Length: 78
Length: 357
Image 1 (tube, rainbow over the protein chains, first blue to last red):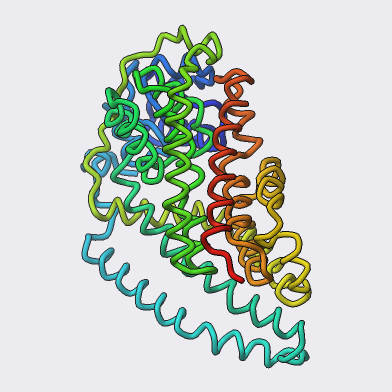
Image 2 (cartoon, rainbow over the protein chains, first blue to last red; image 1 turned 120 degrees about the vertical axis):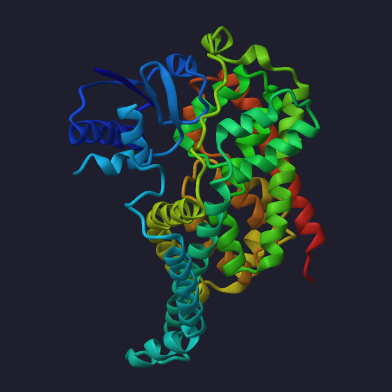
């Protein structure tokens, strides 16, 4: 079970990122728990400066803009 | 759907090889040049097909519209693409690492410059602000970044360049950066750290991270450029058309002496009025600049129009509402006051320097 957090205040890109994560997980047949983190103080704790950010199992793997499809699959599989 | 392809590193089997991308980019550029060179004949032909007298006001406005719209969109596409490729070398996290530990002064200059080059979306303004301040970047330096990033953007520069000319575009770039540097420096001097919202002051920020970008290849960067075009040009084209249509009407119908009286260099009050009117206006540069161009040809003073543009872009109400989450109202008022004063100064200076008798 992968624990994925999508960091972002709720802009359109953040929503798209959540969908992308879920789609990629379904495609790969990986169990994921996707959590949206919208609180600014909470986002700041991860040390990023741009959103959307992606955290997989507690590790920041991406910040700023939509993730690339193939990179996303790699993070979920790692 | 085979699992093996996922194991391939970046640039694996899904992408055509790099030479195809390069050839494609070259061909696209050649096609671009060809289309661009045919714009005037094409627009004249289009007008000649319409049941309108070419020499009439309407004919004039139509010719202007049919020529300027594709011209601006073509130039903007090229500029946004180039900027997208350049920006792939920067990220807010890398910029933060560069700015951390910089002192005021040099830090303000760097922050303003990086504000232009770093990819930035206004929905990221709050995380960016917190991320910068909590990493120890001085408040004034952070403001230099936040003022320059929206004000000196590729859409504004591209439109100024294609509609008015490179001199005005370069002037806007230089003085936009100047306002960001000086305003940020002044805010830093005022020592207003205590005017942040309380929760920002005692935020427990994690260690600043720089996410590795996985060694972007050249093809990746070209793709990022194309994405920037899809995203930005896809968003602003409608504004450009609306702006140019409004500009065309002004060209065709507004009498010149009216503008000279309202927005000419002799009407000193027009500069502060332009700044004030610009604050609640929130059209992006795309909609404003075609109108600005038309006003200029009707005798509006350059300083007044520049001030109006800077105010519309840099002092926007929606952005203040976003920043309200981290800044107190007092601090926002200082921000508006300092930036507004800078814009006023630019407006007056230009009206004096570029006064046409």
